[in-house]
Image 1 (cartoon, one colour):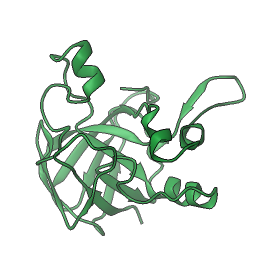
Image 2 (cartoon, helix red, strand yellow):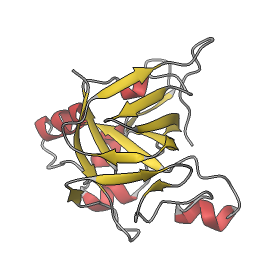
Image 3 (cartoon, helix red, strand yellow):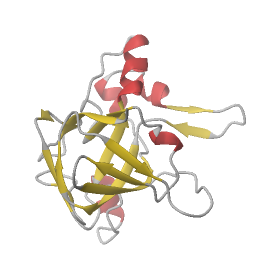
Image 4 (cartoon, helix red, strand yellow):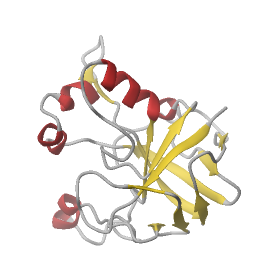
Length: 179
């Protein structure tokens, strides 16, 4: 069963986000009280380039299966440590097409916008971790595994244990790209 395993938020631009008993998603904004909430970009490097860009990174979702894999490779990583807001289990987040709707709990609905593009700060958190979450496939193409980004279409409270329903978009599969 696909479910939320943890929720996290931080009012500051810290790397990790503390786990919470619940988070409130606000339509068109993101996670209530989170530093990345808003209609326009909040990620500092994107703000420097163009602060008027739409915020396609309102909610960061990451699969707990990645945490399991990283822990098995010797990295101490848990929910919220890599800056995600919603940690999931039982959903192939990286395989979802752009435009997929995720129903989180009883009310909240987010739309998948793309892949997280991790940066050097991951190595500041745990040396060598960037190589674990960004690599190359057999064809030499970059593979990003540090979660996905979404926007909030319908607000609501999200808690650990909440079910996740996946609704793929109509039309052809549009692979996720970094946002």
